Image (cartoon, rainbow, N blue to C red; front, side, top):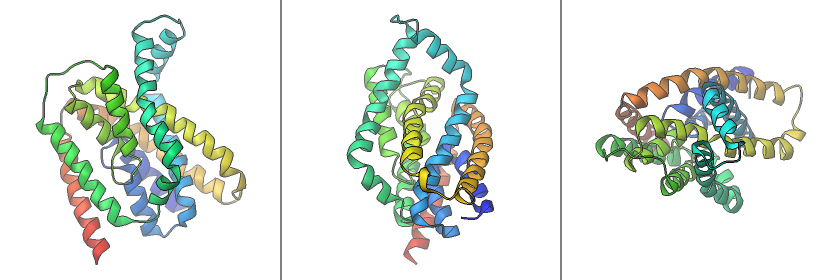
Length: 262
């Protein structure tokens, strides 16, 4: 992978991680377009995901500080309860990682047809969240687990993590502001954990002159793009404009499927 390819893919990751259009799906399409080595795809994907995690932490730094400050008082307060909900939401993705990680890795193999079909799933979820409008309620145990299940399915390239979790939360009756906040905070622990494992197991053997430079450029591009996209996404969800992304995902999915079959 050349440095300019890493920069472009990093920017794509930063924008699409927060916008409900599937960052992993767009990265897979980018990898196919640039013909990058398939064995490097997952490592690059994890690194740029780490960059967007950092941008999330910057945008939600006040929320994170408030949660940690309340949690480490070691009392059963609102902050502790919220942290527990985040921990509960990690259970499905944890099970997926432990039992099916090899199969998940196999999905990152340039299968554009799969990406196209999964973009249609994302489009359907976004459409349903715009049409189904239950009375808003607060976060609770079953809703946290439900969002965790949605996040676990989003390991499939083409299914948007933010799109799946936010849409599922809206359909389940969580308010727009609350589901957006929870969706972005719930991803922090699992992605940080995945990055630590990947650094230990995979990055030890890469070339310092080439691969680390490429990964660094991708990380930088994803971080800056993520800062802008995260703030933009928060405003879009509050205004209820996810339906536009449903149209985009359906059209992009159709284009990808047609090109894959030709």
